[in-house]
Length: 148
Image (cartoon, rainbow, N blue to C red; front, side, top):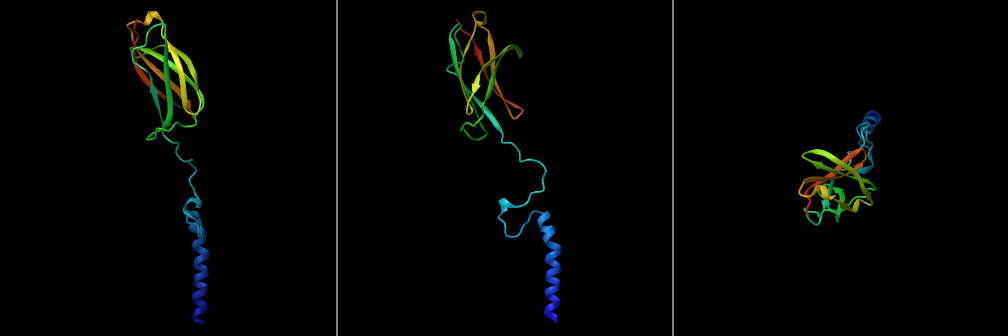
């Protein structure tokens, strides 16, 4: 008789605690990566950064000035699979003086060339290359002085 009493208590305990365990995400017999999650928020998006590479900070007016940019996860140098249109903005004293499409980023990498007009000779400019990923703008900047 005493064994029946303990068995009944154990069955009641399991029936009461099993739904609580499922609600808390502690499912029996499942590895941690398969546990039930109650969070309605999606996991956070990886933090991305952009690296801008130029041959020099002194482009020559009227000549092509090659640039390359790469979007990668913060802490990694491997480009991501981002494919989107990149925009170049030219700033003088913090004010945007020109903006143009500077190419398509494929697999996280952009290769292109910029052309500076003669009227910019001796002018200090900031070139900002930007791309939008999942509604967030990721950009990199470079200060240049256009040469003769």
